[in-house]
Amino acid sequence: MGSEKSTPAYELAHTEGTMVSYFGALATIKANGEMADGSFGVTEYWAREGHASPWHIHLTADEMFYILEGEVTGYTRDENGEETTTTISTGGTFYIPKGLDHTFKVASEEAKMLTLFSPPHFEEWFIELGEPAETYELPPPDSPDEAEEKANAITPELCERYNVEITGPPPV
Image (cartoon, rainbow, N blue to C red; front, side):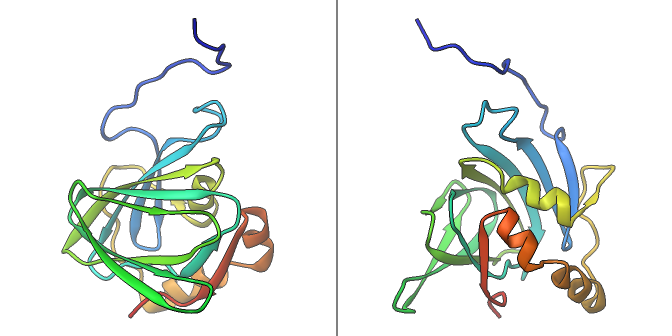
């Protein structure tokens, strides 16, 4: 006998989910906390070469990347400021425990990855900062002005709401 779940099973096709154009990438929410009974959140993330997140720390959630296609460079920085760099290719994973400073950068022409957050909540960040996408296709890259405007939308209040601390700009 299993434990009772408050949410039903569900199925999404490859191109289904809440799609968001986010800093020139396509983020597709496959599961959020409500859908996954509060256990985890999953986002498919599709981006072009050079796309990177700013350095950041998730204060309350563990994160894991599973690379579906392409190659991604993962970076971590310990409490002493020492950086570690790793390359993750198709089929590989990159686990980041809560509290560890990290970032990533797409190293191949394009990359698709699943990002899992546990506990869930951070996947909603993409919805709040992005714009709804009508089709399952990679959006055009942001212009430098668009990227700067979007980066300026990452306020201390937003970071507090999502339990994340931005610690530096994206890797070059």
